[in-house]
Amino acid sequence: MFQEFFLKSMLKRQGMPEEQVDAMLGIVAKNPALFQTIAAEVKEKMDAGAEQSRAMMEVLRAHEEELRILKEGH
Image 1 (cartoon, helix red, strand yellow):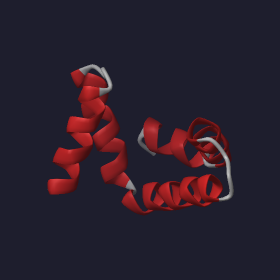
Image 2 (tube, rainbow, N blue to C red):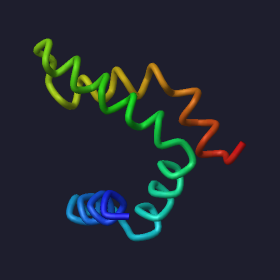
Image 3 (spheres, rainbow, N blue to C red):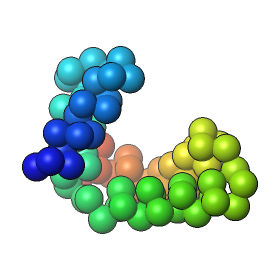
Image 4 (tube, rainbow, N blue to C red):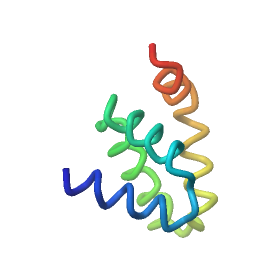
């Protein structure tokens, strides 16, 4: 619950509209382990010297199919 509140606050501060925030939280709730894996992979790439945005793009691209399935609700 605290993690959800923290994530929601962070996304709102970055200017994400409320309905997108709720949609994002719904996707994360469907498969929190996937998002823990994504976070760990991004951190690993950043520790190896990659910029955060580049690391995030690479990892999200690698998990694109899994994210698409979550987004579509299957």
